[in-house]
Length: 572
Ligand SMILES: [Mn+2]
Image (cartoon, rainbow, N blue to C red; front, top):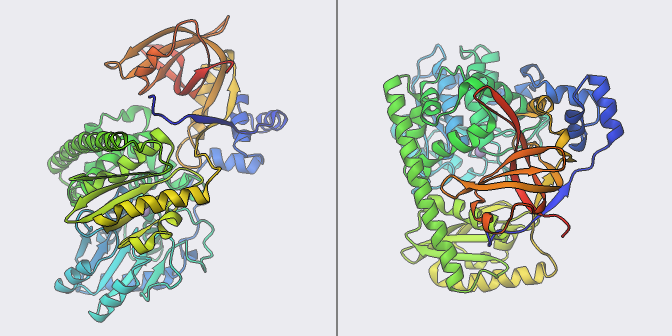
């Protein structure tokens, strides 16, 4: 823990009067309305629709640009003999998008052949490739529908046109100045889009297309049956869980317990998700999506797609077990790479550099982003991790809030063969011999640009509470704020000046269990991953603590419990 970046606690602004008012108006527990107000929800209507997400509030899919043209072209494709290729992506959003589109089109009364195509992360990389177009051409296909990619594929769309293949693009990424000259370009981020919400995931856009096809009677299925897949891709892609996404995810999670997808049932069994208490967004982020992603990281994403598409229960079990094994391997290899990255930075005395750059032989390409993220979490500094292959370095960059890694890379573009991404995450390729120069230039860039800037990570806290305020009934009501995710994080509260009454490490020394109290009350706490802190804390110490309050139920008993995010001595 010693290398961990210090987190700055940042309190949201509450308004007690407004919270009281809201609590009376809508008959809400006071604690719940205080948190809603701290999260800047003030009006009655806003709060009501937030607490009651439902499918009636979804926007009309035909408001998306080119939807009409796209639906027409897809209908023509379905009624022709040539077949349709669905081109997706290798991550959980791209894989669920593909599954949604394949399942929907396969339900049409026309029986044209639907061929899914996922690029290999390791061999082809992201996006629509010439290789995929060639494959479609070979199969005699004259229509490719992209999901979760394609918006920047103008040259590939042109290449497809030369081969007599139309492309319908459905995507949620940022377009470039020039749109591809495709049969339709359906993307809520188009500059000319009038769609009311631009935060859909790739799978959200795919779902809107499916909904439009269903409205026109072109396909024959209850689109709500696809919402479990929509929820998975939306949570996995970390798009804001606001507006439509909140309704889609909330409904999708509700349906997940009764999903009619055998592969999902198998994966939930394999990952020991207790569906009796309802599936939560955390189950998706920490159990389901890492396993779906692990296929593309360690091997080929097709295994994960097959899991979602198979109707055979025995196959489903086999695929789910396979993904589970792959995920264990991913963790083990990921830990190894991160350890080697840390070791290298320490050996070279570079841990204090303003930007951390590490490279190694044989580091798995699919895991570099995860490693860079981990080092960023630990140090609070922008981090680039690269793997070397035949004199070429290829890697991933991650950066903290307030620093634009893409801009930094842009400033070095003359050294790079290829780079792209966004403010917080980017990829890059360069000749190995340019690595030293890249490091010098980036360090200089940081010094010029960010001389006085210190990168910190923040912990956003909703409220400071007293122990007496942690009442089980009130805590249960906080569940109404779920599903949690980006732009709607789990509730985080702080307790000030509480005493450590008991403390012990659990889980082979990895985690810490504490009891914190004041003169009257006390609360049990769990601090995951903080086992090593036992040597820095003592019983009797007075601390401030922040974390997520939960209700812990076991053997007919129940108790409030705090899941700790951070703890520090009081009176500093
Ligand atoms: Mn996506």
